[in-house]
Amino acid sequence: MKVFITRNIPDIGPAKLRASGWEIDQWHSDDVIPRATLLEKVHGADAVLSLLTERIDAELLDAAGSQLKVVANLAVGFDNFVVSEMTKRHVIGTNTPDVLTDTTADLAWALLMSTARMLPQAQKYVHDGKWTTWGPLLFRGQDIHHATLGLIGVGRIGAAMARRASGFEMKVVYYDAYRRQDLEEKYGYHYASSVEAVLLQADFVSVHTPYMPETHHLINADRLKMMKSTAILINSARGPIVDPKALYDALHNGTIWAAGLDVTSPEPIHMDDPLLSLENCLIVPHIASASMQTRDNMSELAADNIINVLTHKAPKTPVNKDAVVAQGLA
Image (cartoon, rainbow, N blue to C red; front, side, top):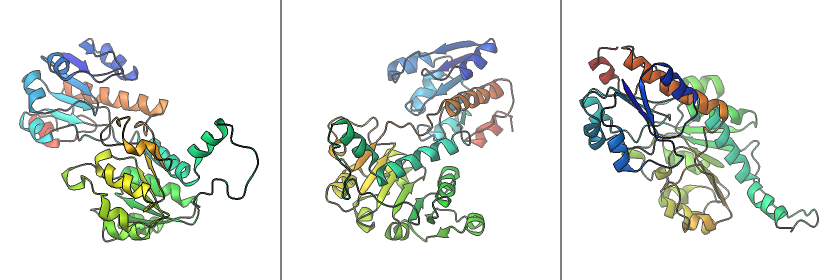
């Protein structure tokens, strides 16, 4: 068996794969593997351990060959997978859900608190030597406690974000394609009938919906105008869910108060992007799952999915169960 790993990742996963005795090839770099090199490296592979930066499409599947059985994403998202092409070829795709839920929610909450209380601006103020005295008008932010948190999407991470709001006695309003009456009954969350209904009443809007054609630029100029002028937008899902030009205009013109982004469009963000010129836009480099424990867990789960498939067992977290059935592993 041959396994190709597309990047430097925490070694717990590769170590388990090496222990199998299979042929393990890895792109030992922190940079994205060039597409031409990727297509060459996957040739003859039985399994690929990929990142979101590698598009798994017909071209790559053809380059790999008919023996490819599984592609394991080191991520909960899999918008880099062309699932229809994978399923057509009976190639199983897997992801790493659950193990990163709380860590991702922690980072989204950190963005919320940092933007609300202007922490990046305050830190820069100190580092620039401008702190000369206490002042009642200095860095007046937005209260978090007793405010309204609006959630766009309440899957695992959205629900974890809502649980964090309970400690601040926030009202939680959410929109999701699937109404979560269990959460409403257990925690008192309020269901909104549309995205717009969330935006109109939320002090903080946190995006947790998957990225797909239907959610491309879900947060656009018209919807940003519906938000309160004191509102803060948090996006730790996928960059293209938010229209970046519309977000710049809304922040620059004071349509909304601030934004905290773990993801951008494009990613990484270009250094001449106007969003980087704004003090009220906090941007970090897609680090929501970046704790040592969680990244180790993601690496191990991705490896376990590969090991299961290559030893004729069902993977732990498949994304296309039809391919699992087609391989006789269900």
